[in-house]
Length: 133
Image (cartoon, rainbow, N blue to C red):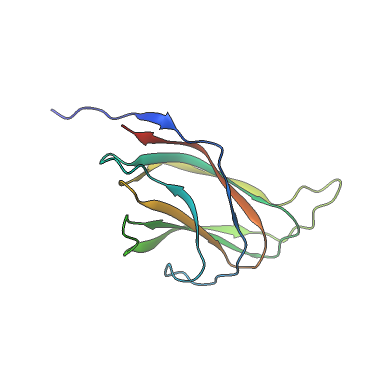
């Protein structure tokens, strides 16, 4: 009988910045590592990430990829449309919360990576994530 595994080590709060324009959808070009799964045989889980622009955005795309532990297979898993916004005192910068409804489970040492289609600065933060034990 299989035993249930639960996230035991939370890894919330760290963020990365995606800044380099990359229009590729095949996992090539500049990607930033958003999250690295635990090296244990059980891996990790991500439930939610926040993407926050730091300045004006133009119409474009944020792309999320999964890479296996050897980074020999990098696959596009989601595209998030970015709308044009000029932030001001009354207009917030672009922001989106990406929920992985069933949880995004990463095999041991796999990575969640991201890119932006335009050379604009986005902070990307996993806010509900952790490692299995």
